[in-house]
Length: 493
Image (cartoon, rainbow, N blue to C red; front, side, top):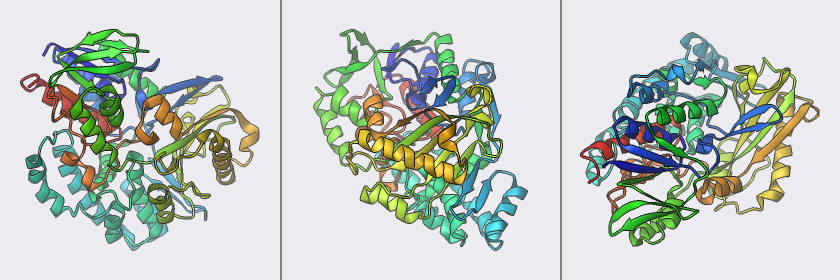
């Protein structure tokens, strides 16, 4: 293999491009938008910098490895600083919980909720460590291409009771309901329902404790920009405003891609970092095997969408930490509305991102940048006219932030805008406006997830949230490592 083309310059596409280019494969990344990043897009509005997300950076060693491949240091391009506490969790009754990796402080926080749960938490951490070692360290970057690979992993899945949900497993160790929420909500950050996501996703807790939580100065967009610089420094070609219309095939081989303007880029291997259904249904519309795969994918369960309100306001807020989770009055009921019933509930759970408490340069002097994110049903479950819903939900979210944190928020707003499920669909080609691709449940994990290499077109590969191991920066970067391993092991088969 001499030439590869990657569709999409999200984290997965950039990480894979760096790996291929480091190995001497001439790689072109084609990106439909005017900037790299995918879901980690950046907007500049009225002097404020707004990251689309993701904003939680864990497992920085997996990112540093992308520079180490060529003997460079990520610190030359990106400055990471620790975030502490990782999150402040807040409930409507005024209870708060600072989630941190400092054992003494964490035990104190647990004791505020339920002293008897300190011992239970220690046992949960042991469990989380075991599934982290098995599911992330050992198998996270290993591709699952056939049932045999799944069979080899089955004993560990049985040992760790993977059929249980994260919430059910947490509940075996701790009794306090708020602590159960504090230890299970993490799956929401990768599109999973804590009530149905496999217990192996409890590894996220250990991953955060092991690696810490970090922020890229200048915003997540600076991490994306650093990855793009590293890719181009290695000789890779990054083409922006280059929308792919078709993945070209001849027989059972991919031969390249054709762009919207008619230009064809030939390649020995094609990789899609685009949405799974979009890849198979639209980009491979002339392939019968791809259409059958699209049919199978459309029958699967997709993660919910998100509604995000970005706002820049007057004033600084040193008392509001970098990350907060504002739980609503319901937990299981709200999750059921989002994942099962397709209801846009009156009550909300919000993830609040406040980057200017760490990097004031993301806003004009004396101002602050925020976003408030609410999980919402995807378009298949709640097919609303989001242009009508948008102003209503914007106000509801800002009212809640005002009620709990910033009483005069509406008077302080300098600029604001929102990002809704239809934007995920239209900007990113996301099937049903899903924010995280396939829902992370046991029956859609490992071999049961989209494979890193297509089963019928042997030089067509996938990278990103929809393939193994899943969503989130660590998962997507691990998917790039798994896919690169397949592509470089004896070149294209």
